[in-house]
Amino acid sequence: MTEPTDFELLELATPYGMHAVTDAERAEIDRRVAAAPPAVAAAFHDEVRAVRETMAVVSAATAAEPPAHLRGAILAPIEPVKPTATRQISWRRAIFASAAAAIVVGAAAFGVGVLLRPPAKSTVAEQILAAPDVRTVSRPLANGTATVMFSRDRNAGVLVMNNVPPPSPGTVYQMWLIGANGATSAGTMNTAAVAPSTTATLANLGASMALAFTVEPGTGSRQPTTPILAELPLN
Amino acid sequence: MSPPPRLSDELDALLRQVAQGDSAAFATVYDLTKTRVYGLVMRVLRDPGYSEETTQEIYLEVWRTASAYDSAKGSALAWLLTIAHRRAVDRVRAEQAGSQRESRYGAATAVPVSAVAQDPVADSAIAGDERRRVVECLDALSEAQRQCIELAYYQGLTYSEVSQRLAANLSTIKSRIRDALRGLRNCLDVA
Image (cartoon, rainbow over all chains, first blue to last red; front, top):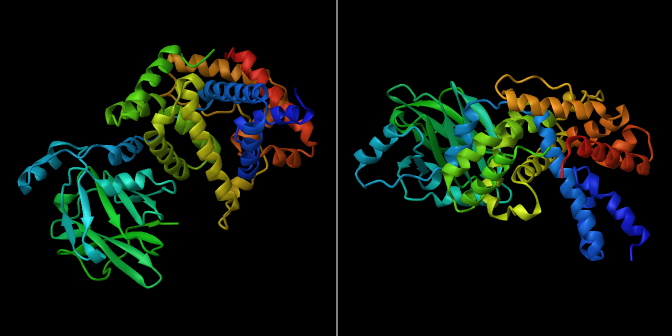
């Protein structure tokens, strides 16, 4: 039997399929479809499917080429880290051998100093990418782009730098987590660490509100000593 | 007219590989779908920075959830663009709700659906032909129907908001949206 309320439910299938309902309405519609007679639920799903297939065809009308650098930013965090030998020379060669090599820069405990290491698998990165609350923020950095994907649930982030030129010899890029009490170092990257596409893991975001970059002399500073080059809000 | 069948079959097979963690297959999925995804997101968000961020989130979701794609429930392209549209709409609503509400989203003037910037790269002969057919079908709708698609699909309004915006009652808007979609579907010959 099809009740009057079933007709009303079926009328909602089109706006539902177009995401033209609020989150609360969507949840309510899902609940009603689950409780509806099988024939009504099937008709609802058929309409949603037809809407989505139609709008997929309609997307030909809005097709537009994304900026070229977006490809690297999207692919870098999911590239498998190449297995490397333990000698430093071998992973250093790997950086230069492949523009796509993802080098993970792990910030040492308490965010002071830096540890370059090529782990077989970046589990922190995988956890962040799998987190339901993952967010993405991008900003220009030098002539390239810095993108951070972060999860508050995981209290961590993955930084991807595309086409960012290496810092001048004798200086490093230093990452800072900016919080209510100022800047805390989140590690540094020297000339060798910055590849055309570089991935770094940011541990312990804490209550920080932004990730900032400066150029610092030598192997880095305790506090920023130069103007901030880029600031990525973490909210 | 569905998406070119070969593209759909290819995406189907690729998504199965992506579900197994195949990053090369994922790169191909990106290359085959990037203009559709980015173009739709850009149409909704109308800001290159937001659009790039949202496109990254969309492909991350594709990477994470490829195993949830079920070809029995629809085409691969529709699955991907559903994720894309949902995320773009979520973002445009979040930006509108945020305190840093920006004027570009406050504009009440609707851009005609078919007034799309021509993209020379995406405009290969086949893509151009498909685009022309879609534009023709959009033009075949009534003005009121096109307005509903514009507000409810491209501007991310809910159907209740559309009814408020157009000062029309809810049931009128619901049937107008349904008729608009039915018109497009028939014109485009979508199964």
